[in-house]
Structure formats: structure tokens, C-alpha cells
Image (cartoon, rainbow, N blue to C red; front, side, top):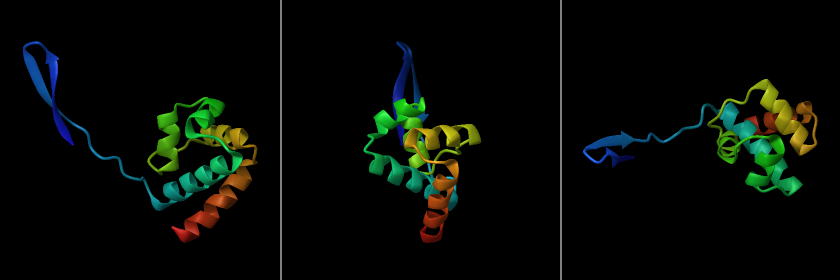
Length: 99
């Protein structure tokens, strides 16, 4: 999507935003597993992001498979969900077979 924006009173510029796509089927499967656990725990995306110490748009990107979750953030997510990281990965593996 492209749109015209004012840089200052005498200059305008075209800015384009590309649609963000999922990184891979594995990223999508992990995101689905996290979303499933978050919803089961009863957290909104915003409340969950606060609990993780992350921005809500970052959590949304993780759940859509658009973000590459670091190991440190994987541990934070698992802790906020109250599950062991291995449980999160088991759920990812189940999802990965279905995606």
C-alpha cells in the first residue's frame, strides 16, 4: 500500500508499506501454539504482551508467524503462559504437522 505524506510544508513523499508475510510454516505453527495457549489462559493479546514485557504488536507478529522469536523471548513467552518451554515446543510440533 502506498500513500502520499507531507515531510514538511513544501515537500511531499510517497511512502510504501509492504504487507508483512509469515516467515515460514514453522513460524506460523509456533505462533498458533502460542495463541492457543494464550487464549486458554484467558489473556488478551495486550495483557499477555504486558505480562511478557513485550509490545503488543510484536506479540501479534509472533502469533501470525511474522517474527523470528529468539530463545530468550521463547523463555519469556513460556514463563508468561505458565508452561515449560518444552511444552510450548511439543504444541508447536503438533501444529507443524497440521500446517
